[in-house]
Image (tube, rainbow, N blue to C red; front, side, top):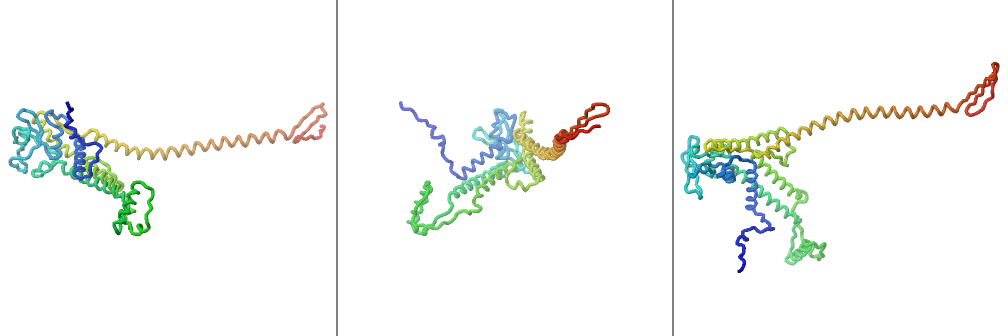
Length: 381
């Protein structure tokens, strides 16, 4: 019996195959990449087992709201709902409609009585006619700019392969030029051509020699700035690499305070909705910032202060005073005195004069004097 082929092998993506540089492909990549980071920024605790946390995040951050309610079976769920019913005094409809293909029926419920709507931010409460809510516009905008940036970088990389364009007057000259360029592209060190071919060819430069080398670097910096701007708009402190030398400390602190206001608004709005869910359905759901992000801020603040204060004071005071006073005094006094005084005295006094006195009796005495090793006559006294 012949072996049956694997029916699912064709469903697997081929490996080691380049992804085409297409805008739609790049946009989806960056959209999912940024959305994944957003999911990791916010941490939910106490989610019931009947609630799909990932789907709840999709509804909350892309639609701007998610509806908590109980099914007829008694299970608590969080699904996407739309406004229904009559608007109240502040133009917000008083009912929510939830329709899902997997549900037996559609649920049309009174807000804050049969269901609770949790919003992503305060503007999402009054977004009654908007197609998108939450962070969808910000994520889509950032993904669009990053996708365009990748395409621009790819085009610049390809343009670096061509230094100039060659123009020919006829087809024969063009084919001869193609042969020469193909040989050089394949790695041949040189090519010999007719002089007439050189005379009939003109070279046209493509890029500017002065500023063309910085195009790719500027595009890469722009990509980093776009991604950094997204996190700052969301409310997270980041440090981009553009125009940082022009900012003073007060401006950086103001930007950090505005960033905290943005993320605090999201946290407070979601937590207020979760408090209503906890009160109505007897749950204990809460939201907070990922602890890994909270640990980054104090490390940066503590590292700035000691670097400025500690190295300045000890470097100026300590090395100046002890280095000048201690080594100067012993070096001048101790070696000078013994070297000059000790060798001079014994060399001058010992060999100069020797005096011998001999007493013979009480009336006479002999005195002998030798000066510098010589002899002198004796005198009688």
